[in-house]
Length: 281
Image 1 (cartoon, helix red, strand yellow):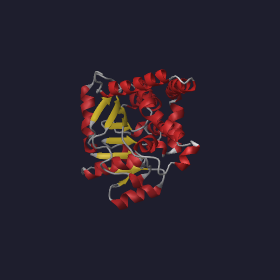
Image 2 (tube, helix red, strand yellow; image 1 turned 60 degrees about the vertical axis):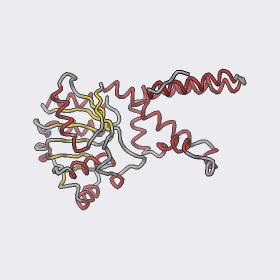
Image 3 (spheres, helix red, strand yellow; image 1 turned 120 degrees about the vertical axis):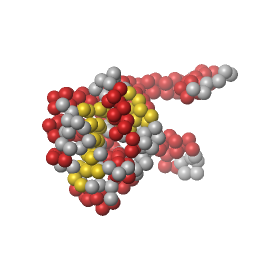
């Protein structure tokens, strides 16, 4: 295949490396010319992705922030290969899919929204790797849900990335779920480390602290955009968490040991239920 990658950050460069290692031709576009040069010198980029090259790409993966991704697809609607496939890799799906589906229908190319559930605490090309997506889930937002030939085609074209599972979702459902599974985790972790006690944690912290704070180390520009674009869902999750935390606080303020014990028991049981490991007690 001839594969076009737009954006050579952590995710885009990892896609580029995966496809290059699988023997495909990889063309890239990035706002930073040095990233393209680095990709060429490192051997995972064959050339630059021009408007003319877009017309012959079998697959184009747009790895930009959501607003920029939607704009790129709108600006290049007439340049995409009508026989090819265009996907994005954005963390929010409504803003991209709403606009990209309209452009795809207008110009006659195929667009499928996608969100690879992979990454790490670092950002940028230098932390990318060809194995980034191995075994990871990916969420797909297709234009229709009864075209299994399209889904099989997407899976086949993504095969070099070796994703572990594929999940189909509507864009609004994706954003609702991702507010809970990803965005809240990053937000809470980022707020948690602002405690004055955090500066004295050395020698007192182990696995719990590491698990809780791993994603506090984030890209502020990217996550602030993701949070604002999905703020309706995220605010609901914040309100829910605040309500639950206040229950624990009130139980302690009232010296209500039984209520506190019941809250902790409920949380433990809920976790076991969600993980499918709940046992009779």
